[in-house]
Length: 318
Image (cartoon, rainbow, N blue to C red):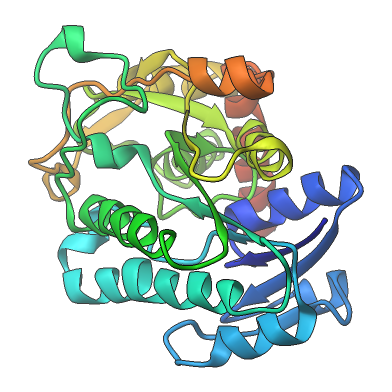
């Protein structure tokens, strides 16, 4: 297929490009700040700001993709509380622009993969409500989660009248090489690497008790590809490992992998009042229909993240 990725210059986009190209698909890329995409995909990368009406429509009508994987949008949960209106602009209005642009193209039955989030499930009312599945009730608890669920509702309504097939995924937290240290685990890894070289005394953290379901980003993008290839119009899939880890376990494992004793310091500014005690999902439907299961061990993912952080710290310290 000819597949256009929005937000292709981000953490997930880079890995998705790799996976799709290995599988033989032709990949195009759109990003507000293309960066190295122009060298990586010459003639198939575009600078596009989804906040500008008509920007994505021009690209879609020119390149005529068979499918769009819509990664672009606001991705940081904590920061969504500071700019809720901007979050809805980025995650709802812009998503509608991309979907309707694809539907208006001359390609017959194009496919639209919307990357929602497992955050739409919110907190489980009771332990027996876990794991979350496609049938679980959505209870979004942040502007970010609310915007993701709102986009799902809008797309489901548009699908009734527009001739673009709709596929929706709700991935749980995905981590791996290339993720910004604005996010918790790469931040922890960077701090551990700095402690190991004497540049920092302690790892600053918020609440380490919440348990989260983590996936390697390389497993996640493989799921996206399988869904683009074999999903059915209207499908909704939860993408998860089925296992939860506390943030404390993760921090301790990073120190262990670095070969140094833990040194921790609570930072009250990093404590969020809306942290659910546990989030964990089931990918049973995705496994049943498309045969996907996670393949990369969690310790391998953490080791890769730490090694990348170590290399960056060494380079910055040289």
